[in-house]
Image (cartoon, rainbow, N blue to C red; front, side, top):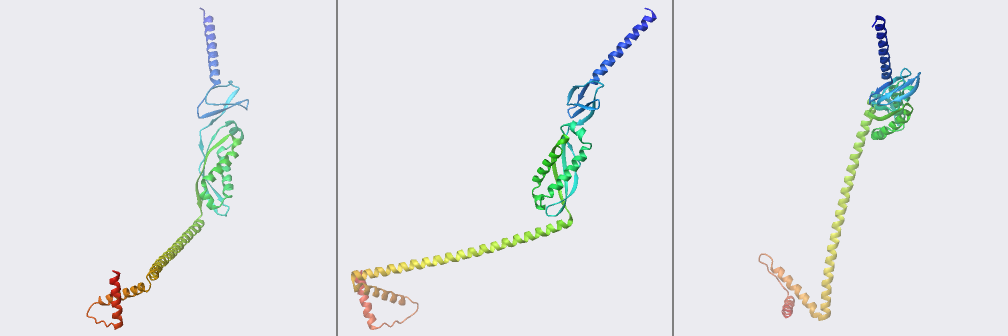
Length: 296
């Protein structure tokens, strides 16, 4: 083989290798492997052509360019503090935190330049607007509802940017010292009022219980008197019936019985006693003993 043939063979081999390398380079340039956490925005001649998702993708080499590589992971904005005035004219400082992620990179790339700054500004405006609709007590007691309303408003505002707000949090509601002192005085006054109300209710209950006790005692006394009156009425009825059935003898029997009981009571006293009884009384006692004996 002559020297010219060797040179021609080497030249053809070099051209073949260069062509093979070029083909391989073109193929490799047309293959795009996108990570799971990213999306690629592809431009053709400076215009949006397509969005490449995670995995293996093919583009036209030298015509298509993966101009923007956008992370689709959830992001957190730096914690922000903004002043707001409540409905009852109280100045408060609201600490907020917002989490978001990009769903449509083509909107984010071509519609907004500084995503974080735009979202932070939007959140600040919405927080001020929502705080201005509520009193201070509502802001502190209905924080969950306020967060929900802020998140819904932010989602609506950033929808054209291809962004999803996954979470919005109000970390703290701060007040100036003068407002805190006023609230502390109000709290102490409310505690004192509640204590007075509790004491008054206790006194009222005590009076009610005392009245109930006196009423119960009066009812029991009246009941006892009624029972005693019924007993006396019953005894009178028995005597009356006895007189009706037995005539005057039953009445004399009752009188004699009472005289004997009185005499026994006098005799049961302590010490030496002298009892003077009239003659007619002795006759009455004799009659009573006869009647008692006869009754037995």
